[in-house]
Image (cartoon, rainbow, N blue to C red; front, side, top):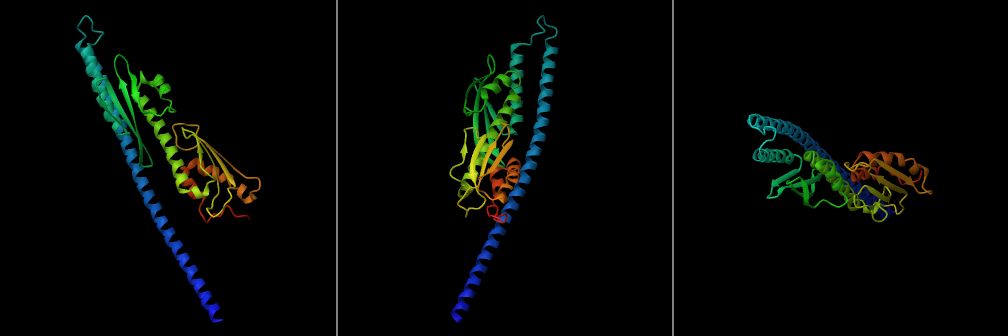
Length: 293
């Protein structure tokens, strides 16, 4: 009798210690989440501030270009060939325009330096404040602007973007290229985070293509469960975004009805939230989505 009572007390104490440990872990996780949200809010505010500065600088650059062209027209107006500015004036205008453009792009993760042949740009990418990769673009400026060499991945539509923007609007060209690269590394980063942090809840390796605009995986919402009732196919129709435009979620035929009813909610979360954060949300132990009714 005494032995049974002692055993019962030990069991209660063990269970209490386990609950305390879980409560402590949840408190730490909650604190970490709050810190991350505060950091993200600060970063978003800083991004907004930099965008405003960028827009102001762009307006100043445009105004400066118009003034330079106006001055050149006044200086050469009395000459026989007044309609054609001098080669030196055109070169000086181009140099000033490039320098002003470099100053503008520095605020958006694009930096550059003048070279003997033209200009070399560096496009730095990041996702939610985490620096990821840098890509380089070496441009020739004479006799026309063209790409000399680059480190942009082959699956990024660089050639199409160059044909569309490079000769007419180099600022637009660099801005759209930066959007493509940042969206790509953002999708890749989310997929890597999902594989690293939730491998026990995935059935095998996550399937993806080089551009990471198609992701396919089977999953459950509890690491203790050895079955994987959910199947996901995420499609990223907009290559300048890091969130999917379509999330197709389905259940295995033998899955309980309670799980099948969750597919719409999962699809909505995947389309609104970063992949690893969405998975963290739907995988919370409190939901218990993998349990039968």
